[in-house]
Length: 363
Image (cartoon, rainbow, N blue to C red; front, top):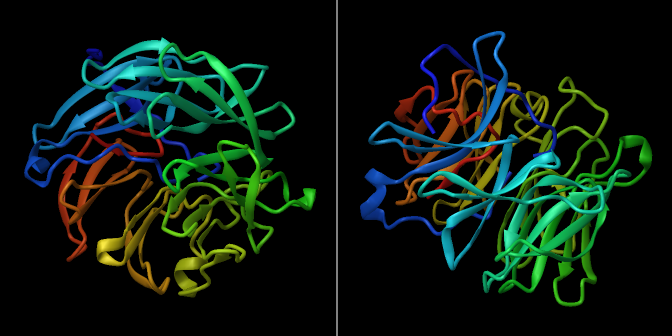
């Protein structure tokens, strides 16, 4: 898709509900120079122009851009291992869903919601590549997982998320268990946000791990082994960006405990903590915080802060294919940066990528 050469305003807004995608397999280390990145975009052709939406693909070394036009703002992407060129894209809190070929950058099919539900931004494909699971919500906020065939996209059923306003989801334990973050209702509801572990075959709830603090929702999760996870949170529904978000580490059969120090960093986590990735090889996890404009780097084994980088409107994260650096989408001009994970130094920066959404995916 070729975009007009007139002035473009990238629309950067914080989105409530926060982080990690189930990334498709990364390219071999030797291919790092040509690796590409995908992310949702929203832009406006001049101050009076219509708002348009795309899924953008960037090859940083070539500084090349491609866009697939969509009718909605793509949030999360899901991939089947047997068809890595196809992305299942979902809108956050909306009816938008689509199947997109990320090689030709064409939208192939629309994924419609059912039963007057809304998509909640994320999905994941079964291990055999035959089924697509998506987080959805009823008009009352009750969480559901929609189940569709990946070929033909026929809706064949659904099951509960065992919470309200679900967002992120990941298949674990060889695809037998679905981990789902439930943001919860308002603080006044008395229901805590949670991460729920659901048996895919029986659709039974196996375990619910709740937030220990009623101020926070449960957003994006980066899964670790043994039903452990790192979770990022926004303020609860109904609370604005003047309230704090949080970063939590879950250990099996314990409540999610928000990191409480260092105080100057924790007290600056206004709005959502948005994206999160873990790098076990470096004993590290990374979080973006758009409202205060910072990226935080934490020791995975201890939860201690390693480094804070100030970066305006930091949003999406993706590891480079060699695992030595991290890509970060940021800024009002939809910029893309690469930061070295040994030195925390900026190695590369590119503006006007059209990726103004919450996530980056390596392809």
